[in-house]
Image (cartoon, rainbow, N blue to C red; front, side, top):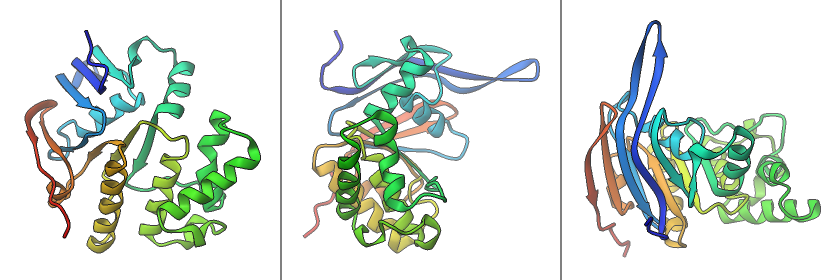
Length: 237
């Protein structure tokens, strides 16, 4: 019986990609459980399978074999349309290069997931988006275009967008990889605050100081998990 407090339950997940007449193995049989409220860092060298693993959790990619259950749902059993609807309600995604739509204002970018999922009344969506922008510290940038913001501000806007539908799981792929060290620290601190509020977070990162905020570090190499360590995060004085 599956633990009801598991946000993620992966069993023997394999992901292969066709290449010419053969195939490339992205993941070679991974099993991983993440409990609700955990803050997990997925670490490893480029090409190790970290992003492939994150894409399986997000339902962006499907496992070639094995089982991927996220937020209580077996993703392999969902149609593409059902998977898109599930993702909109259950997963918040944050990327290295922000992926904000350049022709929409910051607040319109944050409202977009709510519009797609038809969350709340139209008039309430802007109010929620503004509250989220205030939560991440950039309420004063709401009506600006993304290109006018700094990298750190754009990433904060992307985090606000990821939180738009109040998903139980937040997934981040190298969220600080395009930021200077000071801004990166501030963004990681924001993730730590969100986790302290009870949000489950899985982040792929090269950040050397990630151990100071996460509760667990999973190491991936050649498409397999080679290390899984619980960590006691440092407490700020």
